[in-house]
Amino acid sequence: MKQTNYMEFVTAIVAAEQYGVPLYTSVIAERLAKVFSLDFDKARKLANVYLKRLADSGMIARLKKGVYGRAKATVFGVAVPARDEIIADSLLNERDETIGYETGAAFINRIGLSTLLPRELQITTNRFRAKIPAGIGIKIKRPFVRVTTENAPYLQMLELLRDIRLYSIDAGNPELLIRAAIKERGLDPTELVRYASAYLKAEELQNAVAIIFGRLAEHEAS
Image 1: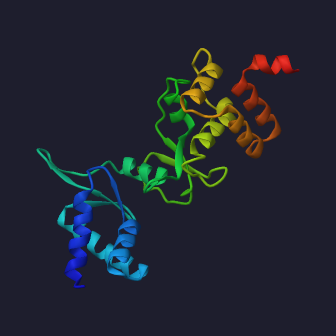
Image 2: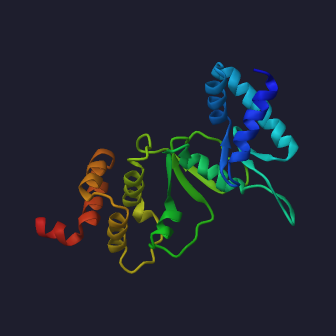
């Protein structure tokens, strides 16, 4: 295949993506390798070259190493996706798989436990070693265990149960709201306790179980 065909192929992939969707060099390299029967290292080098050319042309913008985003023309000039949103997405998702979840004060606010809006977004992710560019309000944390699409909602709730005392809570009945959030997300309380038993310390586990099933149930059992 001629190199121009590589460029056409990469350009077609980029053109098919919507504004705001992250474009990963590694994903495009995989597709190049598969379609053109290339060694992955060679495909990755080609992807880097052609994505840079598209960035130089203004079709896309480089948001961080290995991540690009579509640019679009507006009445105010060329717009590119917000870097923090794209970077957050790269920490939360990898193609169709979940690799991270929102945690900390932002999640506390999202489920109604606090009216405070945090300046910084906390994300627990498999990419906890990633370097966040300066000026991006994202803090990353290491997960209890490798995050998957299946375990992410349980690990997210488990982190909340562990750290609930560390945050400013201004809701009237926080434990009731947590149980409502567990139900709304379709989490199995028994499965959540299994996760708690695996990853929490004894005192943290006791408090988590009391919240999951209600303090009244705890008192009746004692």
